[in-house]
Length: 467
Image (tube, rainbow, N blue to C red; front, side):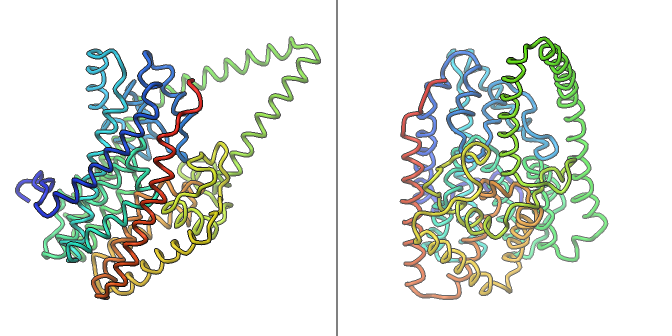
């Protein structure tokens, strides 16, 4: 590819539909900004974290990006998101200038602009996958792209200040490049793989595996050539690991040591205060401590029992029900919001499992899965589909198998849900009947209305209190 930036040029057939998609994306972000605008425009940093943490739990999404763009630091877990803090550094620089110029924190506007860009181009690249790689008719490609963006946590990802939309954008551009290479029998260049891995895994480490899978499915046996393995796999992986190690030692470890010292100091001070308490004061202290321990126990029960309490294994979960997680959360909440406990955080008030109020919601879920499964069968000879399914299988291994993030698996939707319309695209390509299109169109309209109403109603409702 002589000019890599040419991939971002909007083609004539994409202009009108992508303009409509862009207006919807901008409108959702505008509503999100409107909801929190007064709190975030207050002078000083103090209220920002509390405002988001207490008022907009948003299903467990973290407000770390807002924090980093306001007061830059390594705010993400370095071994899971090695480059993410550095990727938002330019936004912090711009925000510093805007804050000096206007006297207010412009973090919401800057983060929204970045999310709008990533969401818009996610739409573009998914449409191109349907149109150019799978070779659907224009109306079918448009329908299935809209189908994807009608899903609950794809709409959510367009507005929440977290890393999931960035991951979705990078994964879709990787799949698009891979699909074009497969179709035109081109090689997935080692430098393409190295760059895409370093950036994609730098945002979310697990997604880097999907770049390696792309290299394998495109190049097949050539993937195992010593030169390719060295330059496209070993070198970028070692570079990213070295980056994470340096980042941890430079930015994280000193703060951990300081917190440990502070914690030990506070423990000694508390021990001295308890020793001076009267019997009644000690009783009140113990009661308060017991209540706090009970809250922590409830939270621990919701996060599940890990395999081990160290390293990456501390994020696993071997106790949460896989079956219930699959139909209520993985293919439930991810695609259709539950009306009860809407956008509540599972670590605060929301139960791990919430049932739908209508049986119709389960029918929609079943139809989505039915079209997906039939589409997989129809496209079983497609190497590109197997590439998409391999990434999906990897996500299911870490989430359903190991239990990583299982209690709130729906927030991971942007990492894998595009496999649903892509598989359905092979059903469209094989079955040339209008009734199939009408059913998917009806489901898309229903999901847009249902998910859109719940989300916009939430965004336009006044916040409960000024913190």
